[in-house]
Structures are given as structure tokens and as C-alpha cells.
Length: 365
Image (cartoon, rainbow, N blue to C red):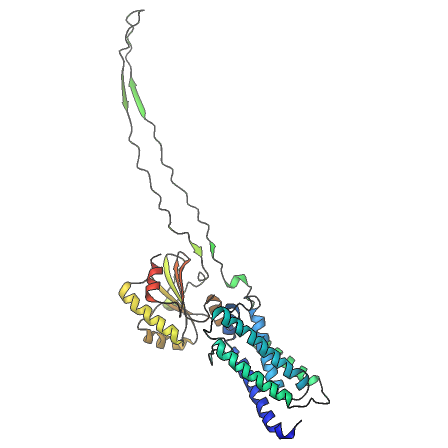
């Protein structure tokens, strides 16, 4: 190893180590479910494997960050593995920019430091240059002991999977699919009343010769009864993913799939969510929206401050992070505002697509 470069090399190694450890940490906080959801939204994996893949990525980032500060198999394995992981991230970010554009938070630093895909790509490129400099100025260790990096790897994976146990995203009981509810409607068959004929015949036989039949026939028709009309629903009721949530604050109970309802998914300390709630309060005062219900994620103690900012209060319930992020569906992050009519989604909005006009239009469907 070149002694003249040794202090600088260790400074750069420390910087890269902190970068990976911090990146792993931000994916765990405030919730690992946010990173799981991001993997699904970006089409990297599905809900079945997102909990496993998310924890593997986080654990491996912790491993690389810690192992970067030790010398065993550093040039032979740790440096190449770090470079390959960054290259994989760069390929994904480039594909994301080409297909979806340079918008939104890529999730590289969680929600702690939101970064666009291009910003993350530049960060990774600079890190790769640092790795190349380190690789060219560090000598391989002559005696490597594999037990040290293996121990670090096992500890990182064991700790992540132990303290952040993955929940199976394939559990169908955790969510309810949009399947129609079978409704049997028994029609009322109108009665077809035939004419009732009353005939009074007076037949007089005069002679064996043919005489005119002097009979009088009277027919009276009974008027047809009124036919009972059946009101056929304009839309068939479905069971939505929101059906299990029937109880809200102050003992309020409802069926979100009955009639028209607006369901909001808000993070209690999210600025976009607070602004959306404020707009809903203004609209409700002016246009009398369908009933609005909020499913919150976050600290319940922040609920009163949220509604003070919004200017009004709606029925609400706090749910755990795992259920919350599954309910976000394709929304990359909260808020999500859904207009339901008999369980059917008439409008589905995120912070980028939500407007007052679009919401009002959806409530009319």
C-alpha cells in the first residue's frame, strides 16, 4: 500500500462506509414498509417478494458499509461487490429515467433525503469514481481470513430479519380483492288477468225450424292491476380493499362499500396530506361532498394538529404501517384519495393528480 495515500484512502473508505450505512438506515426508518412499497411501485418485484427483497438489500448495504472498514478480502471481494451493487442501482435508475422520467423520489435515501433518479445516478457515479481510486491505490492483503466478512454478513442479515420480521405480502386475508358480491334480485312477475265473461243466454225453442237465437251476452273486462316496477341498481356493488375498515373515531361505524364515499390515505405528518385535507375541508363546505373517511398512518398524538391545519375534522382511524402501504396500491407515496360508489373506484388520486375539479367529477359518477 502506498503510504503517501494511506490517510486519504482511509478517509474515502470512511465516507463510502457512512454512505452505505446511512442509506440502509433511511430505508428502515420511519418504516421499512415504505421501501417495500417503493419496490412494488417501481415494478422491481411484487407484493409477495417485496418484504424479503427489501430486507436483503438493506442487510447487504449494512454489510458493505461495515465491511468497508476492515481489510480481509477487501480488494478481492468487498470492493468489487460494492461496485457491482452500485452498477445495478445505476442500471435501474437509468431505466427508470428512460421509462418514467426524472420525477419522484427514487428511495435511495428513503424519505430522509428525497432524491430524483438523476440525482441518485450522479451520486452513484461519483461513488464509483471513489471506488476506482481506492482500488488503484490499495494493495491486496496477503493473509485473508474469511471468517471476519462472513461473520459481519451473518450478523447483518440475522439482525435485520430478526428485528424487522417480514410479513407475507401474498396473504390474501390481508387484503380483499375487487370481486363482485353476488346479489340475488327476485323480480315481481306481473299478473296477466284474462277477461272475465259473464254470459246470460236465454234460449227459446220456438219450433223445429231454425230460429234466431235470442240470447244476450254481456262481457265485462276486469282492469289490469298496476305492475310493480323494480328499481335496478345503476352499478353493481363490489367488495373493495377498504371493506374491512368499518370502525372510526368516536364509535362511528360505516360500510365504505355502501353508496358513495371518499376514502383518504394520509400520513399524519405529511405536508402533501395536510394540504389535501385542507382542500377537502374547503370543498365540503362549498359543495357538500359524499362522506369522507381517513385512514391514517403515524402518531395518533399528531391527529389534532393535522385537523387544526385542515380546518375541519373527518371520521378517521389509525392503522399499522404494513396495511397502510398495501392500501396505497400504485400511489408511490401518500396521499391517496379514492372515490367509491358501491365499492367501485370512480376516482383515484395522488398528490400529483389530485385537483378539486377532478374529485368533483368523480363524485358524480
